[in-house]
Image (tube, rainbow, N blue to C red; front, side):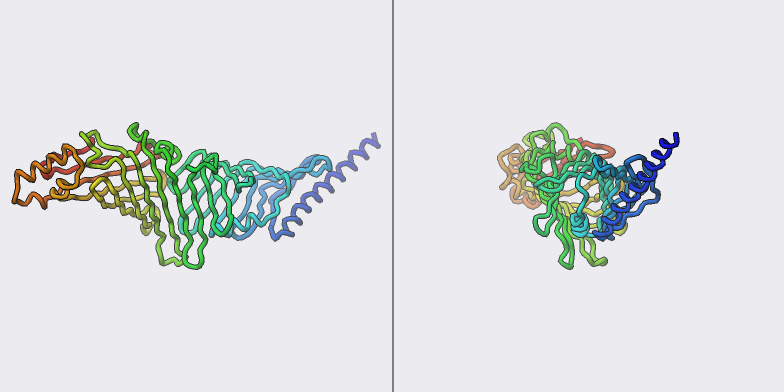
Length: 387
């Protein structure tokens, strides 16, 4: 029995020595790269060292946290496994990007799905749930079960991030080479402001709605949407961020009125200008809509708290004379012209008709897009509205 006990004791000493060396080597490699690796507790078993509640500080703007890190140190079975990981980022995105890409990560490291939290300057927290990373020739491929920002939540998100030059570009979708892939770019500051730029190539509206987390009525099935956006965040704290979005929609929703496209247009454009309120939990919206002959202007609000909500109401007018002359052939033009003839020489030409569009989108509570038209009475026309 004594030789067996001696062998076991020797094996235990060897294992303890190897375990300590494996952990020390990991810490020295981190230190060599200017990183700081700490752990609240160490343990392990034969051939494996374990760090509990470990933290790897990459830089002031990038930090990893893990429930545990396992290091295999048998010569024939070496590995590093990271479990329960979190990636915490802050500050300008280009700084975090360079900090992370400057690290020489161990070959073959295994990292399970991570929770990613990015504290965007002056905008709030952006988070990815269950994010998985893969390095590809096209860039950093990331898939997450959800992306959340404020009250917005997108499920099942795939994207590829790359920085060929100064700008960091993210292409969304399973196939980044798809010409319909949405692109979000981060343009670093040159001393005044950094910018987020959105490019939404033309695509079927139902697909866009599905990715954005809401539904549209059946009459949107043949619609398409394309758009651009820009969010400028000044470095000066006394200057407010501001955002602009512009969408062009073909074959958009038309009310169940006779020849409705003559009034609302078969297609149109929506421009939104957003500025944050004092609380930054909501943004005021200035809306401009081009619908047929009408140019609509109005206001609304974008709430970025839990259960995000976008609402706006925009309206515009045309005189009877303009409608009678410029409306396409329709029952509406005929009615207006008849009214002008009936009241020839009077003030009918300068009377106006108002068209209004109301939009309400609250995906978490009422996921279907509420998009309603209302034509006021005037120029011989009866009032028309949607229920």
